[in-house]
Amino acid sequence: MFHRAANHANHPLRPVRQAALGVLFLVTVLLAGCSAQDDAAEETARSAMTQLLSCTVEDAETFTAVLTGEGAVGTAETGITSSGEELAAYAEERYGALLSEDCLQQLLMNRSLFSSAALVQSSGEDVEPEFVRFERRDGEEEGFDFTIDLKMAGEEEPVATATGNIFMEQTADGWKASAITLSVQE
Image 1: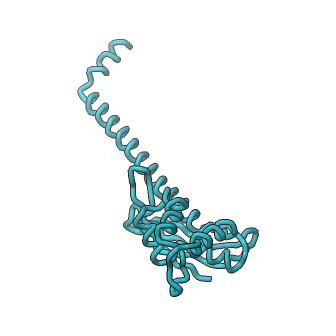
Image 2: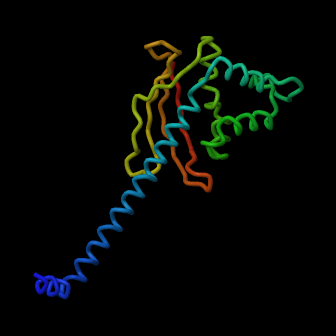
């Protein structure tokens, strides 16, 4: 028995088998790491959309106070009287951990940032998102398409549906949304 083990230890294919096992181990670790990164990007994308589309009555009141702040500069055309700095500071505080600065600016400019607050203001009820579809875009590692129903707290039927896509980027602070295309239909 010892003789056989000694022969097995000196077998000419032993280094090849060890190398193959090492490569298999490295591939497994890399795939697990990539999967974890993909999961982190998707998890952050879902969190960003939840944060963006959730709004309580108190959130809407705060938002309105920021928009109509006393002594701020604005135009009657937009209905926004808050200074750009105040609005940007509010958006950064509320969404900055999950959205890049460029993404925040884009959402401020196209007013998508205000979608849920507008629903709350018109209904007087909290808005909660419910994911209907959230899937990786074909050919996009960090891009996702979504359909999200917006429901009033405790209601079964949605008051609106949000559709669009979100693209993620890895930053020093972790994953953040780099761009969001959002359409809300009541």
